[in-house]
Length: 440
Image (cartoon, rainbow, N blue to C red; front, side):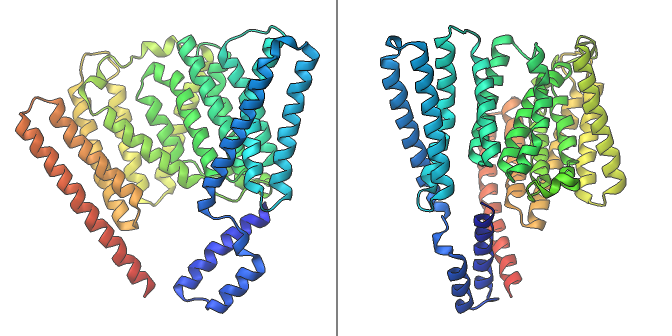
């Protein structure tokens, strides 16, 4: 796996060197022959992996359905033997095809995914055999543990992602059934998601890191959002901006992947802050959204967790403002501090807070314009378009939220549409011009 990853990165770099004229066609061909670039799977072959996975899933469902047709006629020992044989055969076959064959690697990955999905059905059938009953979210929790162990032990990113998705589905069902994080598992889920962070480094997968961040955001929102919903956006945004890949500074760094997660964490921070400012730019968002008394109603564990997050956010703000020389960091933290201050002031339970609405709209405008400028200067499409979308949404939302005539609304929609098209054309020309200047 490490050798194939090296070959992929070398092929990508060699292609760029050839396009820039740093190496000749003859040297490129020598590298291609030596490292067998033609045998590496391209991005287009991802579709074949999906087809193999779907085929494996259908085969697994066919086997399970055929067994279920005669399930009632089998004794317990026969049922257990059939289930164990299915798990052993599917996992062994998938692992063999994945690791020891070159042409059927994709088929092996699809077989492993099918085995991970069938694990849930096996657990449910075993529980039915021994007349074990319980809520559905317990099945998802146990199922996700098995799939995560498989993904981590095999260092298979897609399998680990599937395990995290299953865990998220189980936690969502848990919250819907119990009306929130009322019991021990629900309160510990934010901590569990943080403890799983080394898995992203072990697999060198930013996709796994994003899924863990999403799980953490949703689970901690069940606790922090009880006091004040804006805090479930603000505190994570500050902490994610100050995230610094500290796991790679210790001795475990030699065993973990070398891919850094800080750029992804900062992207999540910017996205989270943008969504927060847009949601609370509406008048109805500030009506009865929280009070100081709600904090006292939390359990001791929830109060300690809230205090830990708040203290960590304060540490990040002080540390970044004192040590960082980036203008982006100072402006972003300034927006976060301003929004946090207005959120504290508005914790009164009043019907509406005009000051909070006005300040939030001003901060949203500054944030959007800052993203547009940052994306233009650094040639980053994501930040540029995210800023454009936020700014247009803010303008359009205000005209639809307040009473205005239909002609005015139509005019605003038309102006925003023309502005997006014009800015998009200009930005793409700007990118092309800068890329041409860099190649000269």
